[in-house]
Amino acid sequence: MTLLTLTPIQLTPGGGSPTDLTAALTASPLGSNTGIVFENTGHEIVIVSTNSTGNTTVTSDIGTTVQGQAVPGVSGGTQPASDIRIYAPYPSQYDKQDGTYDVEIDFGTEADIAGVVVIRIPGVI
Image 1 (cartoon, rainbow, N blue to C red):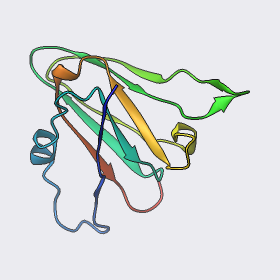
Image 2 (image 1 turned 60 degrees about the vertical axis):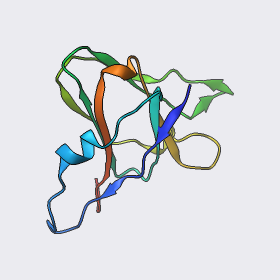
Image 3 (image 1 turned 180 degrees about the vertical axis):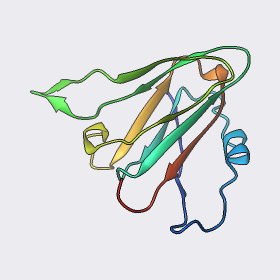
């Protein structure tokens, strides 16, 4: 499994300049990657867009273990074709246990992902 590392887009507090999600989503092709990884502060949202030819599952991995055992990831269910969905927020239990504060998200059919973007929202969520 190969994951694409995404750097969250930082929104500007107070409105600031608009963020072009169309450009951000189309600029994030997965290629041969089966999912994404990003640094989690608890203020991130992940936006996933599927193409018109198929659907996929989006599974958020949970990094916390229970008595040393891995916890199954949380599936967002089937995301249908031509759909755009938001996944978030991610509490610290989703962070990998290697000290990086990274969150991993896996896609069932990466070829059906039209775009994905991670946005960091300033302030309190």
